[in-house]
Image (tube, rainbow over the protein chains, first blue to last red):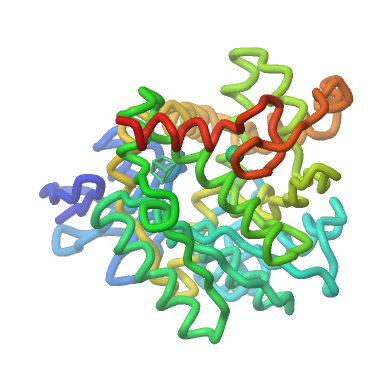
Length: 64
Length: 299
Ligand code: SF4
Ligand SMILES: [Zn+2]
Ligand SMILES: [Zn+2]
């Protein structure tokens, strides 16, 4: 699967991820700091993913 | 995962409320949280003239949308800070948002009206960019609210902004800042506008989710001057704690508002004079903004 990260924008490839929640664990990211978005729709950590998916992990922290 | 209300597929989980929501019920939940906050802290009523500080980011655009849907008439003001493409892009997003909804957006331009940008001010004054920026934003918003006779200045600070600021103020035991960390700052005789923060019950992740679900096109890229910003670092840490103990951020902030802030009275605030150059309230002869401007223009 393809994971899109922002600030700066970059993409990483991962295989064998089953759920959105696993994605956070694999990348050691805190789910409270991101919104997982697939094809323009929000998903939750329980949603299933497969190797064909493109998921954006959009950071929610901003401003100063 | 199913929506708490209708049992349809949930699109977001709000752990501190032990709830999952579908799109429609999440939007309803957010509207209710904001309406409750406005009510509880008696922030404003329908007769007040409201001015919202708009940055083009998720919080201010989401808040504008929410207040609009709750039936409040709110005008926006965008401050162009002169931060390269970031400023022009966020101005575009703000303008598009306002035009699509028939809302009134004023634009104030720091370089054009005051002769300097945030990056220039930060370099010349050796302040952290966000500190020079925050000072300029507070000054100009207050000035515009005053000049155009708005009753209330509405700010888009969310739960995470307030919790991280509180954390920072507690680490330093900054009594003066702690005293002012309230959801409502009343107007003062000397010319400070009434300031309110209706989003304090809504976490940053929720304002972002609200914006995505409502199809609001907002500035996702981070401000280039934000690198190394301490408040953002505190937010990351607090989110790590939140992940382990959902509700810890809200408990920290609302515990302070309910039981802590009263111990930091605003009473010993020094009497304010008018700035020699611009007339805005200040504790010294020349206000901090005019000093920043002078230093920057001299550089
Ligand atoms: S990140 Fe800092 S410099 Fe950039 S807009 Fe926010 S306060 Fe201003
Ligand atoms: Zn529902
Ligand atoms: Zn001044």
